[in-house]
Image 1 (cartoon, one colour):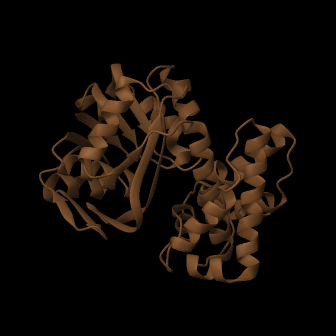
Image 2 (cartoon, one colour; image 1 turned 45 degrees about the horizontal axis):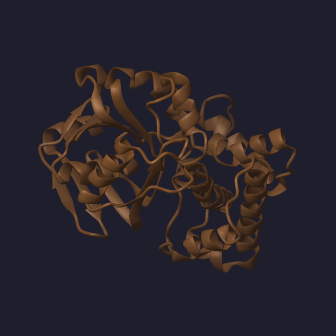
Length: 313
């Protein structure tokens, strides 16, 4: 399959790398030192499942150099999705499928607004991975997993074909019966873990063992479950317990990408995670005091990272 990966960091780099390693025609869209390393030395992936190298790796900074492909994997941060919807247009032909793998629940609708209906799937992934240097990705936790489907949950030929491509690359893949519910179940986990991790600056082992922080995570999850229910999305009776079990299964030193960005004073996914919980809760008349506390506590750091306010740290 001819695939373009827009956003070649921890998520796009890992999954794109696995697909390329399996023989697919994958082009990575990157920039700066990361792009230079990809084109000169290839993509190096260090993984708990075994290291591998994609060499030579096809990479460019300009989507127009590639043209229309069969599948575009969108691996950028959630706050970059709207601008990405414009940037990837040269990659999108009549039959192109666009697969977003962001944290949050709004990427699909944001891409549909830029590309029109018909191209965009709902999608999510589960992995702990990040860039450790130019051209180098480290997979550090979770068995890598992707799930995707049509926004109306039809079982189409293109979804089945894409699933087979991922499976042939050795990636655990599923097509949920309800992709929106699957996105919200992932959101339940990641927004609560990211928010509490960012506020406390603590790794998973501390968050899950301290009764106070574990209780805070659980309360944040229950708020998200209530917001989903108010929007007509049922997550199931075990959603919170399963999300807590996922946190219990994380490596002791695990942190979220949002937490790492905030701790490094970089722009983060705060608006797309805890900020989205607050905003979507307000739209449906649901109170979200724990997520509001997290969002409002982190907002000064977020605005500082974006250059909108200044203060010393």
